[in-house]
Image (tube, rainbow, N blue to C red):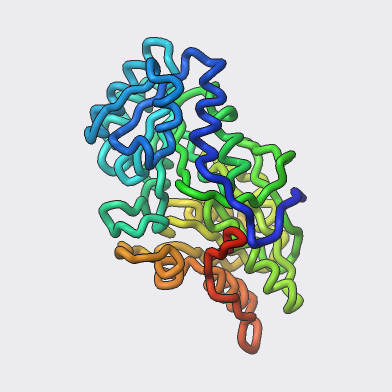
Length: 337
């Protein structure tokens, strides 16, 4: 099992942007592209320090993907930045034909995953994992905290073929200690239990860990598994942990169709794991705009309480489930939603 911190989590500002600049200082082959969201995707730091390798592609994301493919063919390693919804829905044809089909090393970075954006359906990437997961040869990554965000830049730079990464912007929680090592090959067992297998990715890891603490207090043992790489999925770990638990929960900031929940369900079916599965995520619906993220996570079933309720009912527990505290971002740090 891997060590992790306890909430409220301290936060770090712009860990991705700083990590990209740090790596690019020693790698002349790295180029940075921005689709008119330079500051919002933390690459204003790159533009300020390495302007000769910064390309402002404007509000033309599809063209930006084609340009990234051309740069990759010329020996560069392009890191392409925009919001996840524009990197996937708007640019999918160019991603497939200009990047994925020729197996080029383009790193597509989609910020504001799922309903972390209050901007409504036009800005909420609720299907980006599903879309990119279906693209042959595409690696799909959804890291959980600032430590993994810093490490993922170096981890993917020399990875063969294209990569899609989902990143939350702004202040990012620190869930893992500084000596944590991100793995692109293995999902990470954080707590060990035999009642519920709880697989979480990205922003939902904090909620998964909060749910585990509440359930443990009621005598329910939970294996929490962080899944930073949705594709290629660590099927061995998924099958092993799901196979020894009584029920399985997946938690993702995404539609339940085509993302982590689907990947785990496919793995369980192929491995012959016949345990109940509950999928936490958007239930085949668009979300809406809102002033706060906690409101959206509560309304659309992605809160800590929803994770607890799913685990509780999947086990056939009698009596009311334990209650999670109201979500809030406090002055002391980041609290789970």
